[in-house]
Length: 176
Image (cartoon, rainbow, N blue to C red; front, side):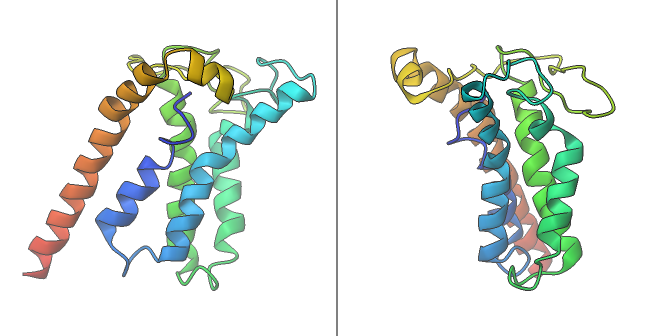
């Protein structure tokens, strides 16, 4: 998986790129949380649930269905998020779905159950350039953290910055 440090890159890039008039600060914070939320499934290891189980790591919590249901729940709180139902729904859906999609680009693990519950199959992207991060802070710090972070900088943060920059440029061009 990409680290918890890099999953927020997608909603952050969209929030910066679209601007505060489109993505409120509260909505941005919700999107950042939604992008991290699927990895709470690592608690399944403590409960004795195996990695490959539907409720194990990269299982149901990484599915597109859970992203959509979570987005719908968040959109029901659109008022406090200072945004419309539709905007909250789509922003949170993209933020949370990006988690599982980014995980498919890693070079380790057992794939991602993107289509759960319709399918228990776990998927990887056709190319897998992102160095997988070891699970747990001790393993992360002892097993090549620098290489993982370098990989995430190259394959997640630089493209996210490019998207944010392009959106900001388009916004400024449109304003002229």
